[in-house]
Length: 96
Image 1 (cartoon, rainbow, N blue to C red):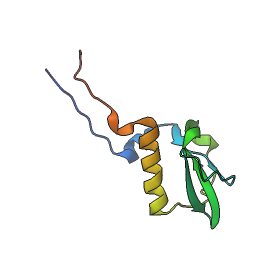
Image 2: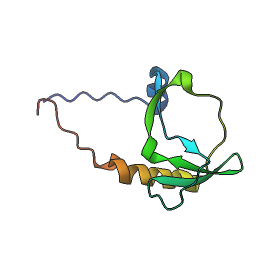
Image 3: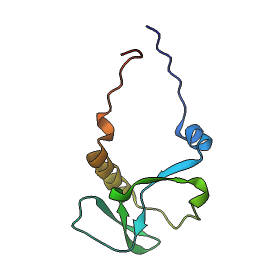
Image 4: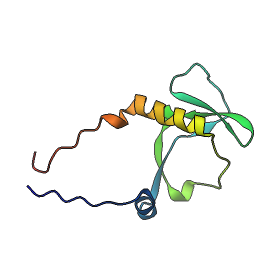
């Protein structure tokens, strides 16, 4: 049963794609919503809308507006995993 595994780095994969997956950032805050991650972006309070995740063309991406903290990034990974079950993917062999 031949398995062929090709490894690509995230950078290789991202360079080949014409789209990116984004979570919109808003200044309208909803601290009690479990699908939102509170963050500070460019020195201002912001919220990352994980419930609004989408794929967009690279052409629609403007200039970088800021970075989020490591704590906010960890919270973002946690909420995405909780909402979309990213860590629960099952891989089956070919032909199954």
